[in-house]
Each structure stands twice: as structure tokens, then as C-alpha cells.
Image (cartoon, rainbow, N blue to C red):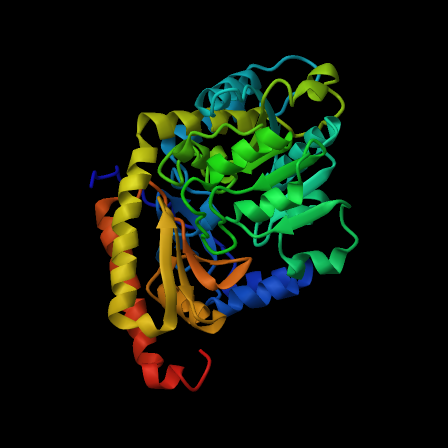
Length: 437
């Protein structure tokens, strides 16, 4: 396995940093009481700096970041991305939105250049959910008003994106949502065909190449290609949400590339900003993008294609290409998947349903959410950050950066081994048959 270059250590916290208790109190007073309590449950740690695969807390501790919900494929504060952003901040961080601006043009060219064939037009947004909204509006501009998504799929929580996010837990408090939206089983081509019917010319299909927030759900081989063919045959529009899976996360630029698929609209985000800037995008064929070509003011946002974010996009794409982070993600993912499976099998197999993954998107599914929570806390104790899955609370998700060094991969493996061992001892097989974890 090739050795990635070490990033500089995270900078020291500034003097006068707030304590964990003080930060939690401010969260409860002004942000979210629930989020403040959750932070306390996770140890009250306050992150103050990051670089590469490392996060430093206010008390000087360092954590290995195998979480971040898929944002940090290039690691945090990659020097080339930071340098590009700093240059842009000093010259033109935001634009007039009236005059032409070169960083947006270069970023769009760079992104289209690594997308599947035919995807040439780019609309930049500030978040993945906004990219989903963009796709839904493009679909409507062509008469595709019926939306078919998948159960367990996650596409964001703004009103339109929430309508296609397949989880009643998040939808029910905000009903009614968009009309004419249905959900079918993920990976079931027959169910999708039945829902579309023989004429899907009024429909748009929205799905992920691997369901991330559903707990790293991997479809059957050939599923994406078959969905693409089905959409072509019925006249449906095909939107592939690669906000979490794209930009090398699965060991290829896109999940679409793994099956040679070119959707009508591809969505990107998370890693698109190089672990430095929040930015996302919808990339479409010229035919699908026609409404935005005709009227550039029909769908706008003040901070869309902000120059400071565009600098990060262009640099991130260059880093992934030049450092072959797609290849690194594929190789490192195979190693880590095997090690995680071995650790679980050796110490707490009775608590785990399955370990699965593609590239650096790996999930450990427990039999219940309680055991998953205990596993996450055990990893935090060993100074490793991971994530739970929003649509599958029994799945702990690993999304480490592709700049993880071999030594850091060993460190992660040792932490997983220790956490699995501790969990197996705390909940031995006899106990697990009589109580929930």
C-alpha cells in the first residue's frame, strides 16, 4: 500500500479558548439544546484546529478523523487548497455577480472535465441540499414533475430535498412536502420499473450509487447501468446523487464510473471543497440545462460560485488528480475493510450483522443502535472520530481521508481492534441473548 504524505500537525488552539462546558452552554442557549447535550454525551470535546487526518481539541488532544460525513477525502487544510483559497481571499473573495469572473469559469471547466461524458454544464451551490433542489427544478423545467426516489436514500433536508429523502423520521414534522413523490426499494430494478410504468417521460429518478446515510447500502452489480437503461427506455430523467460518494470516495472519481454510467444530472459536494470550503454542484447535459442557459436569472443564489469557493474546487480537483487519491482510496479501502471485518469477527461477531464498504466508505452494522453507539464511544476513547448513519442508527460509518498514511491506517486498525475487544467483553454472547445493548 502506497504511503501518503504526512500533513502538518494541527495548529495550537488560540489563547483564551472556551472550555467544553462553556461551548455546550452556548450551544444550548443559541444553537440547539439537543446538539449541546449530544456534544456532552460524546465527551464534551471542543475541536479547534485540524490538518490532514488529525483534529486537535482545546485541551491539546489529537484525534484521528475517520468521520466528517465524507467531507475530508483530501484531508483537512491540504496545503494546496489552503494556498489557493488564501490567494483568492486576498484578491476577490466575493464577486459583483454582474461582471464575468474567472475562478468560476476555471472551476466549472475543471469539474466538467472529470465528470462522465456528456455532463458539460455546471451550477454551483453552497450545500448538497441546494444541489438537489437545482436538479429537481431542472427536471421540472423539462416536464418531469413526478419524482421516484429510494427508501433509505438521503438527499438533504430543505423542502424539496427532504421530499426525496426516504426517511419518515425527518419528513413527518414538515408535511405536506412536494407532491407526486414516491419511494421504492433500493437495488430493486423491478420495483423501479413498476413505479415508472411504460411511459416515464413525466418522471425523474433520484438515487445514490451507494446509499451512505442508509448505512453504506451497496446495490447489486449492474444496478446503476440497468437504472440508466430503464430511464432511457421509458423517457425518465436520471439524477445520480454523488454528493457523498463522488470525488474519489469510492475509489473512482464517481460511483457512475464503476459501471460506465452517464446520468442526465450528477450531483457533487462534500469533498468538492477540498476539506476547506463548503460547496456543491449540479452538473448536467446541455439538453437538461437548457432552461438555465436561456435565462441565467431563473435560478440564482447570491453566493453561488463565490470565487473563494471556486478556488477550493479547482485546487481540490487538481490534488485528487495529481496525488492519485482515487487509487489511494481504492487500495486503502480494501485494506481497512479487511481489517475492520477481522477485528469484529475476532471480538464481537455476535453484536454485528455485517461489515461492508466500497473504497473509503465503510459501514459496520450492529444488531441494534445501542451497540453502535457504544462502539462509537469506544473509538472516541481511543481518539478516533467516526460517524453514525442518519438513516440507519445501527450503522457506524468510517469515511477516512485518502491522505491517511500507512502508520495512521495502522493506528485506526488498532483502535478498532481495541474498541471491538472492549465491546465484546462488556456484552458477551450470553448477555446479548437476554438484553439489548
